Amino acid sequence: MLFLLTGDVQIGKTRWLENLCAGLQAAGTCVVGVVAPGQWVPRPEGQPGGKHGFDGAGRFEKLGIDNVLLPQGKRIEFARRRDLAAKSKAFTEGTQAKAAKLGWAISDTAIAQVNAHFAALAKQAGITPADSGMPALPANETRLAPHAMLVVDELGRLELLHSCGLTNALAILDAGPTPQFPHAIAVVRETLLDEARRRFEPRWGKATVIGPDDAARNLVLETARAAGGAH
Image (cartoon, rainbow, N blue to C red; front, side, top):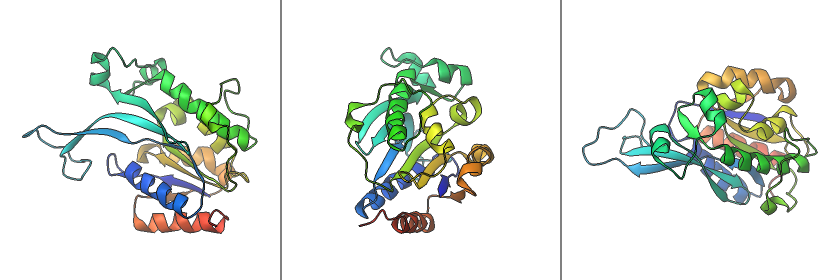
């Protein structure tokens, strides 16, 4: 089954997904892929908050985005807020993000690292990755447990409108369910939901659209348990 996790921006989708992954792992399901936690800092005293805050009150602001590779837990700095990236000599915006005119500055190097991770996962599932010549990360040489849950946080304009970005994650999802990955969760903005369904449903069947709530958590846990992930 393909779950598409969606909702408005900065409502806690990634925090919810991280908690869900912990619950799946505790129940015996191998969770692989990537989650994308934000880099948050408290807002200065007196600074007005936005409509959507990390804690619902606008007391934090988002400076960047990391990618955490699962199951290893390796953390990669993936993106920075565009104004901060322009001031930093240590962070270079990649050509893909520039061409797509994204709101975030994304590193081509980081994209390559995450793609290498998904290339290794694809090979374990018997899927030819989009960039089969890309070297796999050494930490991913261990064979995965069967019936793993694939997590992709997130598929955005790069992937769904420009066919770049995390192309090896797309390759796995394009293949549909496999014995290694019978179920998957992909985070997709509401504005891209129709495009995601159009692309993936021919192989996966009707996608299950979920939000970050308890009902969705219980559904995913039960689906993984029925697939044989829990022991």
